[in-house]
Amino acid sequence: MRIFNKPFVLILSLLFTVQCCFSQDVWVNDLRKVFTQNNAIIYEINLRTFGANDTNNNGIIDFDDKEESGTFLNAISRLDELAQKNINTIHVLPITPVGKTKALGTAGSLYAASSFNTLNPQLASKQTALSLEEQAEKFINEAHRRRIRVIIDLPCCGSYDLYMQRPELFLKDKNGQSVVPSDWTDVRLLNCGSENAVNKEVYNLYKEFVDMVIGLGADGIRADVATNKPASFWKDLISYSRTKDPQFLWLAEASESWTQPVVEGAVFTPYNKLLEAGFDGYYGSYFKLKDFKTGKELINLVSDTIKNTSGYGDSKSVIGSFTTHDEVSPVLINGTRLSEMIMWLNSTLPVNAYYVDGFDTADNYIYLWANKKAFKTYTDDDYYFTHRGKIDIFNYSRRPGGKDTNLSRIFTYANGIKLYYSRLISLGKFIPLRTSNPSVFAYAISYDGKSLIVAGNLNFRENADTLVYVSRLSKENMVLPIKILEPPITQNGSLNFKLQPGETQVLLTNDFEVKY
Picture (cartoon, rainbow, N blue to C red):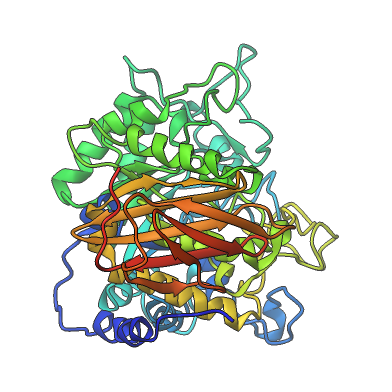
């Protein structure tokens, strides 16, 4: 039986009430502070599908049948749902207009930007007299009323449509042709210049984007493939944004694992140089979790990340990038046990929790019509292009979501634990714990006489019996269950866990602080 500590459940049930007290008339951005203290719980959404209304349940929005795709306004109806799940930040995938030429999918990729200073008309509601900009402002204001901060995605490339309009903005190869980055056939690489000579035309394009999203009231930017622009480009842009809003967050899509440019001859700026340029955080390499076989691999990654974010003039952090829109749904890899493991790692590690719309209800993002010929298209691509097992960003598709209500309940609870113990997680020390089973990871987060102790089995096929060695722990110490199936046996200097395949357990010691 899964055990949750009842007093915790009662306390956490109050968090939504507190979060939704709309007493603050004027929103004051605090996202940098929240993020660098590892207290953000981020939910990634694609507005084109977030509030979609697929009444005939065929997975595609049929406008001829009066169905409605996601808009700024119909997204508002789901904000209470997010607040109830203890989400305090949303990452909104690109809201810029989408290219229609050489497109991918029947609506076009969200990352094929055809403009950087206007909003995507696909997100406009026809059921209002408000302008598109006013609709966007209303959505952001309603998020703020629920104490939900808003990060807007900044695409790294321009669409083919934009290239045809303004070819001078784009990088050319030795034959004078525009550069297609990697296999992203629907976009072209912008020419951002070099470290010593930034291209002012592209810089001004991005500066206009910053002006637009700050004007709408957003709290931060996630920079898509931030590595493909010079550090000096970002340093000037970030400094400019901070003159308007000192708490404006900059999150870089970058990883320690990335060491090469997206295409030969392009700029490549590693994550550490991006942090020096002013970014508050980056993705890290947590997406590797699905490939780890030993607990030591995870522990080493966390320890390395802590080192990699220290030593700067201001605080830095990362997101728990275990699963993103570029990753296959975890339920297709190792079922909901992997989803639960990701939840508890996000909630107890010194990272900002990060999830994709539909993760919490176990959506596998399998679309029955995927990559088949479309009945109707709004681009020059007449196929429903998708990436198997990944949230659709190419078509007018259904709202993400599975049917696993139990996973959703655990999701809310895990997020609540992160909020309730935010001070412990923010100020505490990450302490690796030695185990007797190589497939098991274990660690403690300790501060002010308390410790969260976490153990997980990376073997998703076999049980794992293991000792977790905790120096000075005795049978007299009170070990409280937060999330367990079978309580571990407390011994002098160790805990004896019996973990099911893929199981993660979380404990609290109120009267004992784990030391190095």
